[in-house]
Image (cartoon, rainbow over all chains, first blue to last red; front, side, top):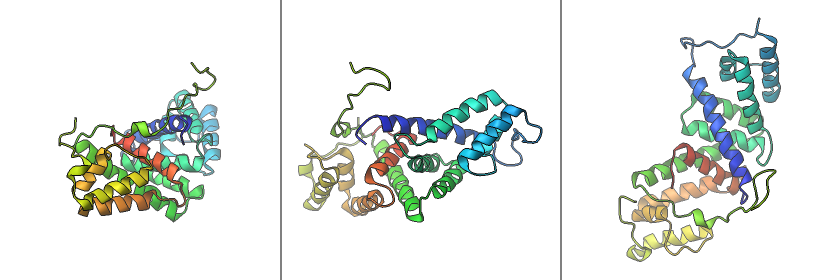
Length: 174
Length: 84
């Protein structure tokens, strides 16, 4: 992964995963102050949104954060478009993307994200060994990062990776 | 700036310097001085040894490639807001 494109893709995925998790975890449980939008009686744009979400995840139930965001259908549709794009196969496979999202969710202690992306990993064919691999990497680098932060270590390995001279998508090299 | 003085490789014991050789091989890069994290881990080889082996076991190829796992590691570091 010497080119920058996969890393840009991963970073956008991390951001939108965290955004979805924040809403899901904040409004989890029956006492949450904001309830999910019920599909029955929902406006057509919400029905269409939910149908697209169902198709993407190949499951009947709508993930909680999208049912919450659907109180503002236009907003929910834009967030969903970003999520769908971020998780679609491109430079990185959807299987790896779900695994990255699982690592993000574990690291940020998101109960929604951890369960959701673990289920997606399995649905996309990641076995128990693969789950343990991601768990192990997440755990070990949660150790390294805290050791580095405690001692305030400065980055000293950035130079070992080559720089990608290619322009931004659709752009021209300088 | 680090809150401790990072010792040069020459200041470490022979057992600790063995960890530096493993580090060089792992990164396939000939560092002038071992990376700061390697020097921290080599401070206590009884900790750094098993920690490093656990890391290598987790990072080795399996269902995911090493490159994919490096990306998982980078993502975890990003979420932990770790600049190192």
